[in-house]
Image 1 (cartoon, rainbow, N blue to C red):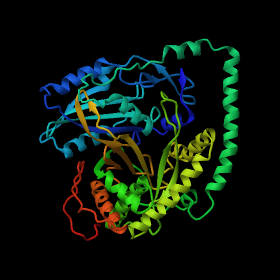
Image 2: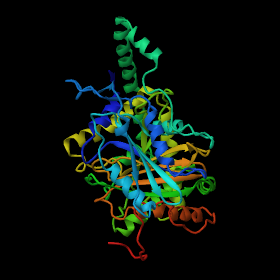
Image 3: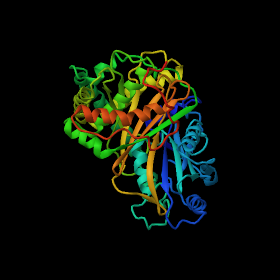
Image 4: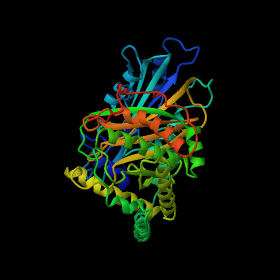
Length: 480
């Protein structure tokens, strides 16, 4: 058996019917010019014939007396007929139909008695396209790990017809031999060394936290007085998905003009979109809403699970001027990243566990929506590739992230950079957030607002590239 890390186990313990802890992605592809009518069916056959999922996706959770306290992976046979699924969209096969289908698929928990992943090939998308929707449990993979896995699936060669894989799912032979030949002394020494490292990590964490709570631009300090918003409510099982495509070159131009980073600009865009949305709902708090921003940590090349810490940043929803918004975000993120980089790996692991502990406890006891929020939503940002990617000759058009929700936090935003664009995915609770797609539409308009605010003339807003729930025509008056 291979035991889950404390951080991976925490995501498993947060699992419930209303709050499934899986993350996913919706990818759209353009069929090759010479694609036969049965292209998607052949791709399905090829994917089912090859073990394209790495460890621990060839494993299931162990069922022992200690599983509740110390969950572990055990290798099992993967039923590819179950995990690889083939679907088709109803006519007209537009972005709305695709978004509704994926939102419905994402609302259903994974079967915890099987390997914790599903992959759906979806044909019938208009304009000679098809889609792939993939989901996996957060206890097995995080955002950066998912990006690395997708990069292995796809090719930079448009003439590569091999399809996904192949690579070996099981443990490498040399690793198995090393474990089998481990002496009794080595087995006792390893946990002792880990315990000593964790003890040093606690000491470094205390020192780091003391520094992180000082000063005006402390995100940690701001988290202690997070305002409650309409996003901080109990969630239902059903989800909505809203998507948008942003031009990366325009984002970089704003970053240069405002002396900030592209990631700071993206946070400011999300803050501007949320400000406008909450104003229309007559629900904008006087204080800025806060985003939890995960940061990927160093990991081994083949390491699965989670390797992530994070910080909290005000996104300036109380600021009417967009340039002020990005300036404040830049100050906080610069400081927060520097403070995280100063911590050794053991301290960062302790920080991640400390930050997640209240959510695990609150989720398990049902008290999470009732206690004061530590932030208002999550905003993740990962990069897929600067080059075009292909699947059996079909070009990847866009990749839309689909993250997870937990009680008291009904909105999650994930951004994926691919070539010269950024795909934005808004995942929200169906009951808690009305007209979710407006948030996606407003990101495009928030970018224009930022361009004008920093002295760059941007083009007029355009309709979203993809839409799970198109916004209805409306006046400028506030919505009730």
